[in-house]
Image (cartoon, rainbow, N blue to C red; front, side, top):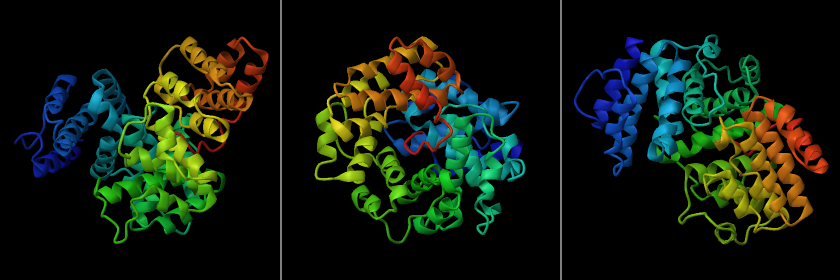
Amino acid sequence: MIGFVLATAAVSVLLGACGGDSEPAPSTAAGIERCSELEEDAEAARACYREELAAIVSAAETPQDGAARADAIAREQGGFLLANCHGIMHTVGREYARAEGVTLASLMDNLPQSNDPGCSAGFAHGLVTGVAPEIDASSPESALDVCEDTETRYQRYSCIHGFGHAFMRISGEELDPALGLCSALGAEAPDCAQGAFHDYWFAVAGLDETERPPEVVDDPRRLCADQPEQFVLPCWYRAYVDSRPPGEITVTADLQRLCAELEGIQREGCITAGSVIGPADPRTQLAMCTGLRGADAQACIHGVKAQNFLGQALQAHVELIERCDLFAEPAGRQECYRWLGKTLNVVTDGEFGEAGCPALSQADARRLCEQGAAQMDEPLVTFS
């Protein structure tokens, strides 16, 4: 993996981010600490973390081990690294694929074996982007064959999302042709589209070796209003994750302010997108959502980050979903049990449907949870 280390070092030296060494030493958690001193300059910090994370992947026995190590360090350190690791690892994964000669045929041998939406998922998406030149645009459905060999539902979702990124790269960062390629994936199209919109915002910001499109729409209200119905919710979901609106989203009134004057599916997408960038703790998110009524409440639930409870004990997952009782309206409670049943089942590889839903105290809650868990193989649409 020497070539990968050298390539990464060259990038970081070019950016002048982390010192003058031309060949980084194997990184450790302590090595990453030096990057935290640069966080007042976000671009310098990202470049420093990129060098350190690339060294971690390079030093590991397998790229999967390296990505898992990155996840552990990011969760331990928190703050800037945890919030930005996904995007940083996009670049690490893409450069790794190029330096190590990863191909479509060998992609599965390199993809992380993790359900973590942070560093590992970012690395996976970077790997898929790295093999984009091999993709036959006349046969986009071959992406489904590549992703078929993933071991978990989350990994399959992440693989499909990664192809959305790749379709953008082979389409010159043009949304319409990339979304056309996603459409060829049938039911998986919305999850592919999320990757395409993710890459669109990379291009708007000029990140990850993208080029800003000649004509840019940087207002989500305009961008998402122009999308076909099946792509409206993915459009909104990525818009605020990747291009934060001004102000904090901490209480119900913040969501209502953010989405004022929108109606129908556009409002639904906006509320979900606002929920996603709200409190990191899904319990606090649910409390925020309970202040809404009707379709707004359900849209807010679809942004609850159950994946942030990854690795917690089953009882913690059960206690989270039981907070669905806080919704005053039956429709809100019901959708909460269904949605969290689905998403918790995804992040636990099916364990929650088997052991978590039956542990709920109320019969109706168990039924709705199991109904949601049974839908884990359907498109996730608003998920990360």
